[in-house]
Image (cartoon, rainbow, N blue to C red; front, top):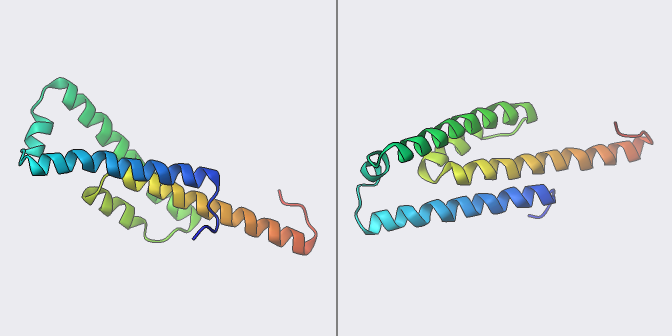
Length: 124
């Protein structure tokens, strides 16, 4: 479980957990109070509209990054980060992707060092 977890990956994982807890705290309150969640979110004036647009653009950029960077690194199941962001929150799935991305990069770094030690070459 702890293989290839460097400091950066752990920071992103903590952010993912904070995003999940932070967003779902408010979601649960809305559910318990039987609020019209979408109505409350979209009908409260320009400030909420601004926040909505800000988050929407960030979410689209994050999803694009997940696909582009994930493919570049050969990561699997990239679709799951995007789909599950609709069920949980992009504040959870994007940092989770970044944590797993760091794990892939760390694994490659460690494997590169192992290969260079075995062949006696210096990594670039």
